[in-house]
Image (cartoon, rainbow, N blue to C red; front, side, top):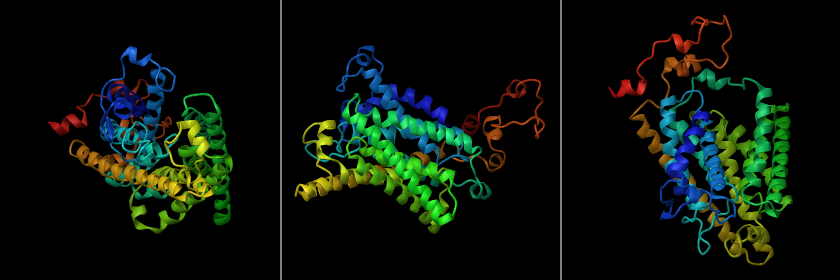
Amino acid sequence: MALYAFAAVLLCWVLWAHNMAFGKKLLPIMGNPSTALAIKLLQRNGSTYIPLADYVYFQFVFAAITVILLAGSLLGRMNFYAWMFFVPMWLTCCYTIGAFSIWGGGFLDKPDGISIIDYAGGFVIHLSSGVAGFTAAFWVGPRHSRDRQHSPPNNIIHMLGGAGFLWLGWTGFNGGSPFAVGRTASLGILNTHICTASSLLVWLCLDMIFYQKSSVIGAVQGMITGLVCITPGAGLVESWAAALMGVLSGSVPWYTMMVLHRRYAFFQKVDDTLAVFHTHAVAGLLGGLLSGVFAKPSLLEMMYGRNKYNPGLLYSILDHRPGDGLRQLGYQLIGALFITAWNVVFTSLICILISRIVNLRMAEDDLEIGDDAAHGEEAYAVWGDGERMPTTSPWRLQATPRIPFLCRRII
């Protein structure tokens, strides 16, 4: 699912989606869909003084990451044909709308009006992926009950390796967002690691206090929530604020995941496989709101220039102008509500439309089998462990091709 999404998003991005997110304005929420392939365009320097081809690719990776995060809510039961439809539709109808509205000059990116502080995607990427993933999981339905009750990582050592790559990669995620090597990028990188370390330690301590054991999986979850929480304000807050944001990102999502999720039937009904809602939607919302509290005026000016954003609430109070900070915090709430509402509505519409073409969910018999039923191959095929096909040649060279499920349904 991740490999397909990365490839499909790239082609969609350069063919129409990039300019929907960052091109000329068509509507207050959307740019004019057009290709980003013209060589004269790609070799031209953008407003950030880097070749536009670099900018197109950098923003594509953000878009692809968002879709891949969303997939974490749907693992283990979504029909792959449905996923193939879902990726380009969601990218077009949801991601580009949020990106243009907040980053691309849309109605939430107006220096003389509402301007949302979102340094590197707390709302555009993490809140949208968490809300959309949870919504899509509702429509796809849950895994079998036994799979939900016991689904540990296949290999915790591999999980730790992936977590290390993720933490390392976030340096580029937040450090690259100013599009220049300088003070903002340096501060963004340092704050990213301070917040993440604080969040991991708080999550670990909470596990030890309430469960008497230090959980490796919990530590990784705390790491992720710290990375997500600092993203909307990484280069815009002081380092002490980044540490405080880490304390909150290690405790608030912990509470929603470990307490509220188990207490309320609605959360139990929706099978969010990798808890994307808690680690990304909750942490992204928290980070976006805290950025409206702790964003420092001088850092905002260094990143964006003068008079685009109101100062964070804390600094407006210290400056005896609390109205400015309250206004900015209100703008942050408006942005969060817009991203949440848009993704709930349009993710639902996309799922309903796809369900009229193919089944959103794998067949129940296929769910019993898993990867072999979905793709005709197994992630861990042990010789002699119930193998049905001869091992002298690849399975696909022996199997008789069948008409694809989609074609059979249309016929």
